Image 1: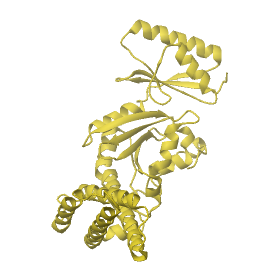
Image 2: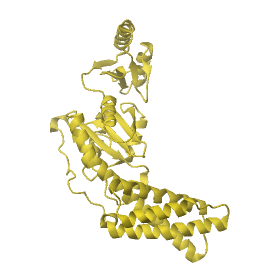
Image 3: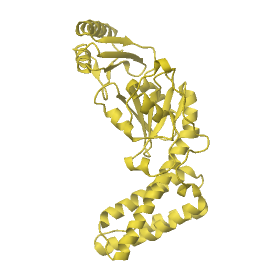
Image 4: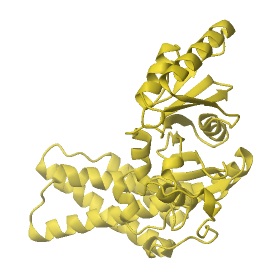
Length: 339
């Protein structure tokens, strides 16, 4: 039992009452919620549906009584639950998006670990919050698209504004020297949605295309070196890496260009036909398939470089991205957990 344990209650049109336990005695807060018959939902979240008002009243009475007995602070807030904000944003974006919400007030927290993959421009709003005020972030909503994009949505601790940023698909993506995506911040869903569609998603697509471009170039270099020495180790792994970064670059270029420049579109169409028919049933077949990838990949890299010099440019803040965002008033500042 610990007086530092706390439970924050939110009202959600989708979930009913949402409870976020946290603090050093969070296990006791979870026990109090279980005793009140709140339902577990997602990482560290508990919900109480509003379908039976008598049950709701009984559950709340039980929760407050046990919380008082165990020394747990229970606070009801009128602030919109971050999961509802995430769902409102996802519903208005193109493509199909799923939303997961996690409790960052627990220790350990899978959601905090997931935020280690944040991919933000220098001085961006999301990285600034997580570097300096992470301990004050209570929950985060993760938006995942069917095409592999992943966004993190949270509230800025000192003023409640909504922050949305991108996550890297793999840790190495954030260390490739590519121009990082630009996180955005705004006071309401409508305003942040506009910034997400006009700034964050285009910069995210560019960063992913640039990262796949650089990774594809690295794999092609490995293949050239192996061919020069006459040794072709890791045939299966090289083929898998070439496929992954080829199609990753292909996909994100289509997101950047509408329509694709004809030289690029023609190359991609012809290569797709040739490569889709390739197989690697034995070592000889694998070598031939890798030769196909080497030829087509080299053409793709050369053509992309000739069309867009940004893909070979060093890391920099894209035009229009934010400089270091302002922090809260000094008296409210507490050091947080840095990445």
